Image (cartoon, rainbow, N blue to C red; front, top):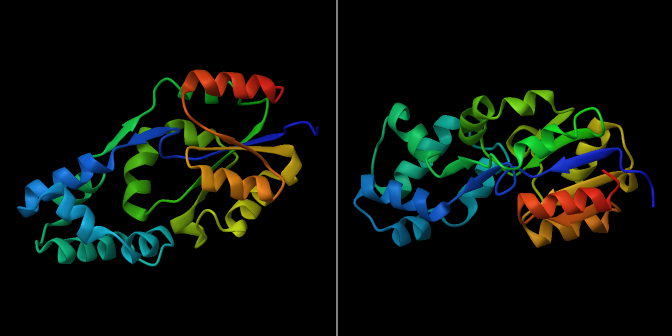
Length: 199
């Protein structure tokens, strides 16, 4: 087995938790809708367009407000749109411990508003070797090009990289390209997975 020279990490439910039900409830409270109705109205192509970078911050605000039948100013909308995130404090020291031992890259399906909210709250990201945000590169997981771009940016071949994500289909896509894909579940299990990889 090739030595692991790079660790590629997902963002949501790895470095930060995200509770979509909480997001839908918060938006619903402002729009006079149930969380379930918000989820129904926001399902589909809008998320993908935002994650591909086809919608900027204002485009996201406009599309979501239109779907929910409200018109919230950005100063109110942006915090609501990111109200479902909680930093995963237990995993951050473990990731920081990889600095200098492996190259680090973030590989995330995300949108412009979430990136703007999360980056200041995760200063550790500034020490990563690469940040591959779908909305900035135009590719989304599980498309092969987003993994290939991350590998290019950390200067490793697929067999020299481990990839951690909470979604099995994204892990499977990484494995299909030759990466050492691992399903992320908890900070404690992450420790064992790293040890098994020689990290």
